[in-house]
Image (tube, rainbow, N blue to C red):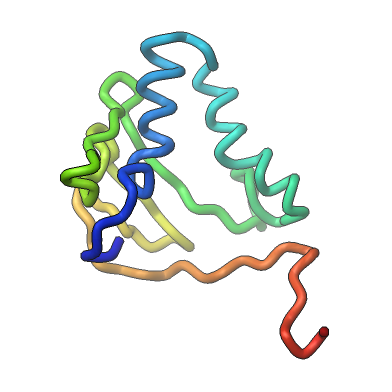
Length: 121
């Protein structure tokens, strides 16, 4: 992400949930956490072609080690990638490869069913 000073959760929200609430506190199963990160928001935003891995749908894929995933970002050093995060593919293009950012930016903005352009007002 940017060179600026973001909130640590810009890098660490999902790794924090996986580390703290799934692995340490057992408040969520791994499967339920993944559903809450993927299928549930897609469903709530009515993005019918996203949120699950299925032939013919769009998918970003994250490959991580559930035994070691943890946030590393802090308020004093927020631009830290998570531990245990090996690969992130966006539109099939690696943006994290073997734990390192590639510099690729293949994503695009998604607008849900409720989005209206300025000209629609």
